[in-house]
Length: 322
Ligand SMILES: CC[C@H](C)[C@H](NC(=O)[C@H](C)NC(=O)[C@@H](CCSC)NC[C@@H](N)Cc1ccccc1)C(=O)O
Image 1 (cartoon, rainbow, N blue to C red):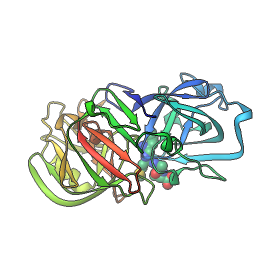
Image 2: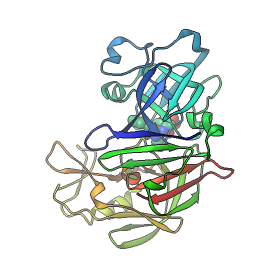
Image 3: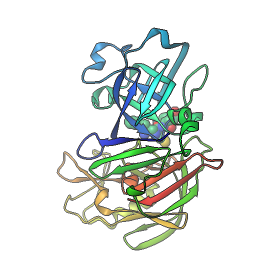
């Protein structure tokens, strides 16, 4: 089988993308996240006050995996925890009959406040799943054998609805060749390495290792590269109150690219003007990774590409131009 689910921007700046998922008998809007491996949802286990504005999973005690718990924390300090159920999950017509559904009993303020997001659907390696006493599979791992091809493809768009394709490559969603590289899955994420970056038409050799992360809004790279980029943006500055580099909204932003597998993967300058700030300037889509030692290739990087995540004998990532 194969199937496709829409990926709809949650707001006018593409803060995140939401996809409809049937969990048990509810339809929830989940943030598909290639940077984590838990499928967790807002649930009837939470206080009603935490559920205001959310769709949520009505737990069925008969489906509980007794004694199983989960607790996840994310790089931005947010997190959630709860109990585990085995229930039907359907994404774009692809059905997992007994998928581990992680029902929240507690979620951090960032998630409670975002009333559009009803949970996350992790698409990284199952080795990052947090369920105890027995780690559970991601939705992709659960359905892998029933898929026509062992892959999913990510088509996030700039200020428009895109899609997640499971089990097939949709030729109508890209132009030119697909450029494949082996994925480094050793740390549980979809890891890739670049051998150079370019700002405008100036290219610099450098090793840029990072993870693909549909659940991260921006593109986080090493500080020297960020400084070099904004040196080309008149009036740009690091603004600690805004938490990153800002610039005049009228600024022309150069394109940015990472050379992966010998091919320049270009981020159009237009995509790097992420959003206006409350201070009357604009916030950059490229920001520093604060020295965590690797880059996070989030939505700003992804939304100009069709990215195939193939779990064959050797995991691969394919990049094509939208
Ligand atoms: C502090 C937590 C560290 C980063 C680590 N956790 C992770 O790496 C988890 C799996 N992944 C994440 O925290 C990040 C990757 C960070 S690499 C430092 N991806 C998932 C994130 N985008 C999910 C999200 C979506 C919307 C709003 C907020 C958060 C751990 O548990 O050790």
